[in-house]
Amino acid sequence: MIQSPPLPQLQPGQRARIRIWDRATGEVRTVTESDEHPYEAPNWTADGQLLVNAHGRLWLLPVSGSSLPVAIEAKGLPPVNNDHVLAPAGGVVYASANDWHIWSVPIQGGEATRLTEEDGALHFLHGVSPDGRRLAYVRLEPEGENWWASARIHTMSTAGGEDRRVTAHPGPADGCEWTPDGKWILFNTEQFSQAPGHAQLARVREDGSELEQLTFDERVNWFPHIDPAGKTVAYLSYPPGTTGHPGDLPVELRLVRVGAWTTPTTIVTLLGGQGTINVPSWAPDSSAFAFVDYPRD
Image 1 (tube, rainbow, N blue to C red):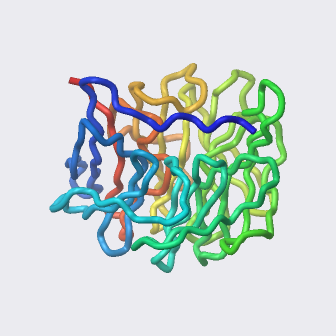
Image 2 (cartoon, rainbow, N blue to C red):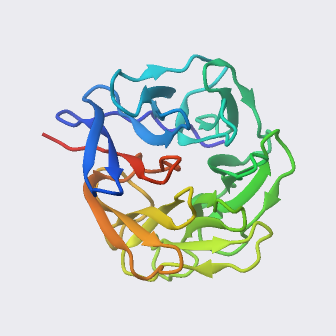
């Protein structure tokens, strides 16, 4: 089995800023910032909190920024990474951990439960179905030197088991999440390009049918997140030639209307990438979304 990666750390002179972009005004405000805690990947809860990760733990803080993040006490949970989503009904966080498994965790703390089996694969969570019954994740088979190329989209029950493969095409896939109507899974894939690392956005039915490329440009596009209204997608756009989804690069947050995929708008430019918007981060009313940047002094 591949060794777990080291936990992210901030570099000297670097800060992690949890920020919110407001749709009505186009303005960005900072919720909190730290030169100690490498916060990543905000989710937005129905009761006005943000869930982030740092130091292998999950943290909650109010969207208002009126208090500092507080760590969730999750018993039995290995160190987590930046792949975590909220159960639609509330009360539960699903998270990927550095043991390569997916876990469920009570959002107010308590005993964690492992959901994936010991099947030799690496499991990276990214989405939960609107009815709360299934999870969408990236599955990798760690064999050979180019094991990343094995990345495929799978779904499974939120209770564990009932695993289904969604994509089977060549080219790594990542960043999978359902549309609010449950009809499509959005994701990014390198399938449509001959250039290594050139990911574009796509969508597919859960049964693997009707695969469709959505973006067609020279930039490297990752992590599509559709708003709860089902009308707009925010995503992370890397400079041309980027391989994978590294951090500490000049990146763009782009917004595109569903059905107008070739005419995105850049709404924020920042230093970031990995950790910025790995998971769904829209406000429940679609009025704003959260992200993290990592400026240097």
